[in-house]
Image (tube, rainbow, N blue to C red; front, top):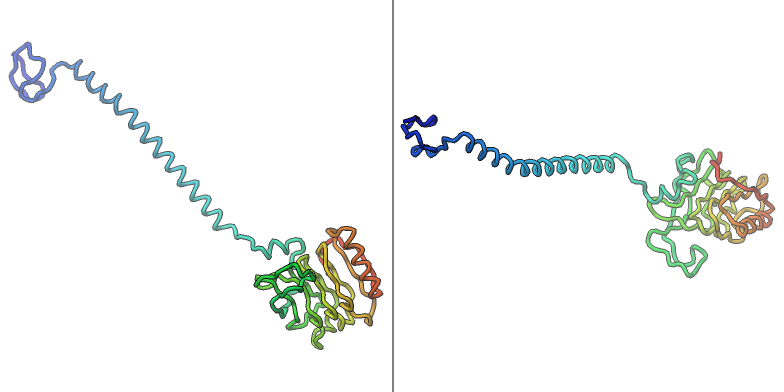
Length: 243
């Protein structure tokens, strides 16, 4: 007779398992059953571990991308288009404007939208005498300059140098006709229409008309002809900051 090592029940010598607790008395068989269970469980554990690691790494990558997008400010369209000659280096000038209509860009084929504007005047004179006219004002695209835009008595004598961004397409008649102290005007664009009598023919000193390096030969001739029309001097401009 022998006893069950698990429940102490009395069993016959030939018994291979306990009739009371139903436990196998064969150690080899018990060990084999446990090993088989462990082998079956191992692939499940490995799969779960791999899924967990993938989830953790994906979370880290997404978190980093979101942080980078949050920390990096987006550049607006006006900032991109003014990047060739940063408006931040020039005095801030407040301009008066109106909505653009057909013909304001000297092309009747172009239909302006609600974000296109034409400069009609200047609110306050700048003490430096430098007037930079950007591509965009208040998020709206500037197409041109109206007649007599710089003719106000409080503005006209202060105008010394004018820089036009490449979005300006049209300078109307007498836009700068009253600016007798203007010495330089700079064109950043590749093409622009200059109406007759846009500048003053009677002024103090010599007017210099500058063209940027982006202009092609046709535009070079256009600006040179404008210079001759106003007894001005044409000068090549490399697009650098005007001071």
